[in-house]
Amino acid sequence: MKKRSEFLATAKGGRSPRRGFVLQAAESGREPHVGYTVTKKTGNAVERNRIKRRLRAAIRATGKNARAGTDYVLIGRRGALSQEFTSLVNDLADCLAKPRLTPDPSHRHRRGPRPRPNKAKSPTVPKNQG
Image 1 (spheres, rainbow, N blue to C red):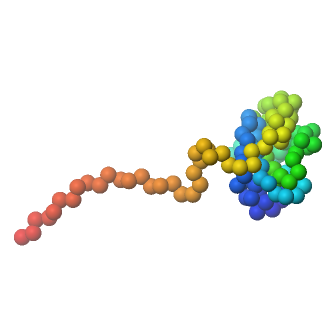
Image 2 (cartoon, rainbow, N blue to C red; image 1 turned 90 degrees about the vertical axis):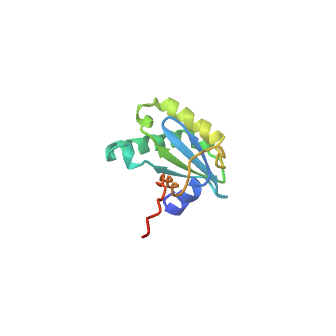
């Protein structure tokens, strides 16, 4: 997966968080595609690239478990660097076997601007006219 629109469409699907990654999945109606992303707050470029390489290797090891008609996005976390590779592969295999394709309704993440807090207004005192 390379286009931003594909990543955004997959982000509207379900999420499966794990220690080393978050797997997003959404139905697409075509053969499975996988996208990788790691945010800058995860670390410097060297660490981000190492995370992506580990996730790609894990997908190669478990790619047969991917469901047809589903797109996946793997969001790398720093835990992917310290986690045992076999554990990472097992987590990914579990997620691919039973991906959440719809958003979790109990997920409390808000999308959009946050409401502004009401500032306590001081009572208005009428001015003396005279």
